[in-house]
Image (spheres, helix red, strand yellow):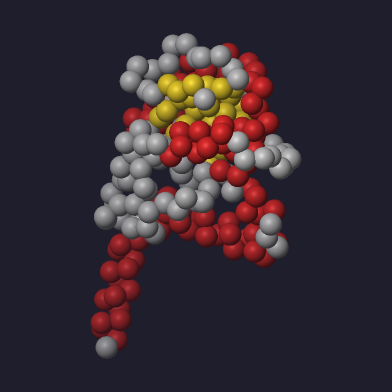
Length: 211
C-alpha cells in the first residue's frame, strides 16, 4: 500500500514538473503597464459585446491533453481599432476582463485566495479556460523605444489585452510588429486594441477588425 502511494505521488510530481516553470512567470512591467483606476459602472452596450466576441475569437480553450504540450491558439494575435471616444467603455471592459472587479467585491482573505487560484491555474493543464478567467492587461499611452524593445522580447503568461491610446495609438503599427515574437513563440492569445484611427503597417496575415 505504501509503495502504491509513493508511486502515485511520484507520478503526480512527474506530471506537474513540466508546468512548474509557468508558476514563476510574472507580469512584465517593462513591456506592459496595467490599467489604472477603477472605472465607473457602465451600462451594457453593443461595443462590450463586440469586444467580448473579438477577444474570444480564435483564442482557443487553453487546455492540453498532456502537461508538457502547448495549448492550441488558432489566432495568436489579433488587432482591432475603435474611436478614442470609446475609451471609457474600453476601460470598463478591460478592467473586468482582467478580473479586478473580482478583487473589489471580495474580502482581503477572499482576494488572496482568488489570486492564489489564478496563480496556480497553469497546473490544471487539462481544464478549458473559464469564460470569467482573468486576462493580463495593459494600457499604454506611450510606446517609446524601451517599451518596443521589451515588447519584441515579451511572451504572454496568460491571455493578454493591450490597449493603445494617444501617442501609443499613433505607433500602433510598430507595436504590432514588435508583438510578432509573442505571436510566433507564445502559447497564449494576444489582443491589441487601438483607440483611434485604423493602424497602418500591421503584420500581414494578422486579423484587423473595426469595432
